[in-house]
Length: 203
Image (tube, rainbow, N blue to C red; front, side):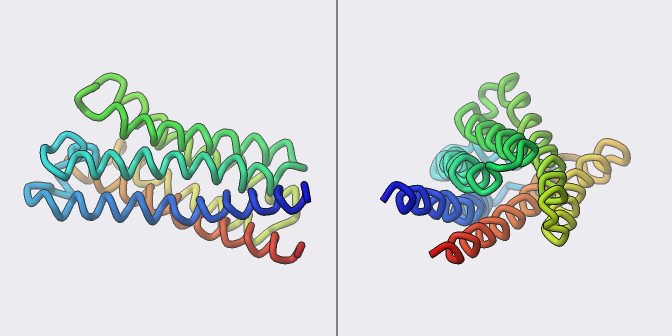
């Protein structure tokens, strides 16, 4: 019975890893659609968080709700899946930290300028770092294809920011935020399905 409850909890954690990105980007895209003045080149995504009406609340809800789901995925899905690996557990903890920062971005919107900047940086730094750490865990576990996929996503998530600060290819940060967020989201969904497949094999 205890084992069955544990497996069920892990499955819920993996399901949260699928739901989190879907919820986040549905809310973000609806918020973008609801605010005609938004510009992908001249705005940050977080600018939507202080727009009156439905736009701001919807955008912020998407962030903190998906952040809570992300913590669920990190703790009960990813951490449990990699619990035999110290490196894997460390990567899962850092990923949970990134998810916590995502919650804080939604709670402390641009009205809290200093805190908002700090937690935004924390999210976009911690998410790729967690993937670099997790790459090591997958290498040690001899999951080579997963390791290659993970480090590729980590690079994709990091590169838009490196290029933005080196070349300033866009006036504002909505594009690097989106590219980085989509990359991490794709990884989360793929790994969640991998965890579910692993759990199915135990049944």
